[in-house]
Length: 296
Image (cartoon, rainbow, N blue to C red):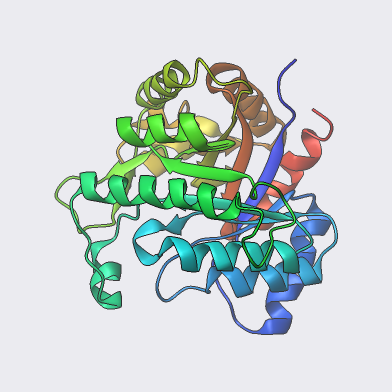
């Protein structure tokens, strides 16, 4: 049987405390299963935002999507994770990634390093978190033992091996740095490249006792009665895929809610993506798709 769908929304903006809580409650009412916060300078701080999200809601889990490993020291992060897990009633999911925006490291006065060094740091962080949070004498204690579920996001070979060894959830970005554009400018990967990344991960994960949950971040939810015309318009923006590819990539949803639901069923069958995340820009646009897939 295929793994049941879960739906997350990444919350990007903080206008005020009441507005944040209301947005979280609305997401819960629309059927989202996980409320997520990223880790970028100039955006909400993840852990206090997640505590507020959990206090405002009852059912959804909360998570980081994803923490920039370069911002964090293992001991200090273990304290944040355990505290947040306790304050949210054991609803925390911990998402980690290497970070990809050099300007943010510069702004924080932190070394950016090479890609290899960033993966090294992430691997060290994961191993230390497992050690620290798995220690029965660690204080504060995390309600979820030995630690909250771990999500690792990315696409490189070493990162996929790390995720296969340690993560309960593996997130596939489906994006890459756009050639010739400013650092941090992303473009979409064609479907066959996403499939190749999933296949490489599955090879590394072949010996796992329990299969991981696979996540994809949908970059755009484009509601339309004319899928091909909308795909042509989107591809004309220079996003790394042509119109035909835009109709196939798992990082785009194009069509009516029923057509989008069919796309997600196909993506679950082809890639294994059962955990689907959207940006809060599409909070309302994606809600009818959740309704279409209820219970599946």
